[in-house]
Image (cartoon, rainbow, N blue to C red; front, top):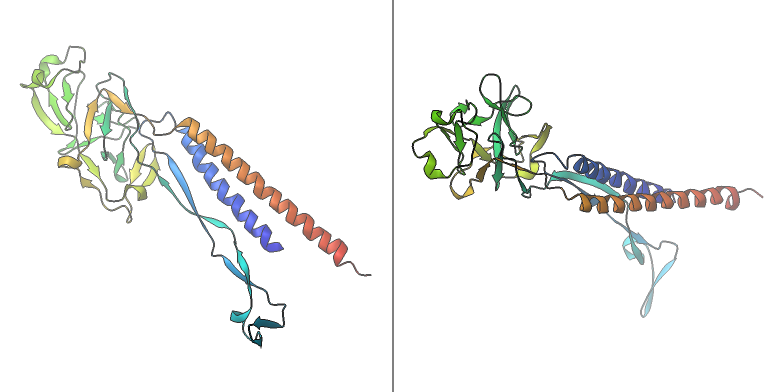
Length: 285
């Protein structure tokens, strides 16, 4: 009977992990470039139950003693609980929100911006950038955004970034208001760099670092420069919203709460049954 307590307790623990992932998703619903987490669980191996109380097994035309557990009649299978397997991100494309801010960039497709941090290169989908005190394009936390030639140096309103990530500079436009002009208006502009955009073999194994940053792992593979048809399109004046559907997350949270309560009731029933066994059935005469 104690086995039921452990099985129900493992179910409660699994639902707690799901709730943590859902809560984190809902907390980051307004975080640009955020990718929602999904908790995956797996069942412990099932137990094959056999009836061992019978003295013989009836076989047509003969009676055979059990002699071996393999010859005992099968009662059925018993689940032994569940455990968390992994929590991994879902890299679905988030919707693009227009901001008309020249320093806001969004990626359409698979890939990441590269930023330089004190711990090394990190990767992000959050393209809400700005110009730092030194004239470098940086993240909200002050980490430089990298181009293929290193950190990107810009000033207000004199640059444009096309969908391939190429950065053009036109000093004649420094005093004008930023406008997303067509490509032919920038034919005489100077090409100063190209955004460094990378991708990995298995993005689901990337490790979150906080601040919308990602780090590669052995399972994800090393980051490689995205090129050709695999290179995502860059949209200037847009940011990518989180791919979190608040209604879906709320529905799943209700499911988690109900499953958690069901496991609580199982533990309560097991506790009452054990109490009756100890106080009634095993009470000395």
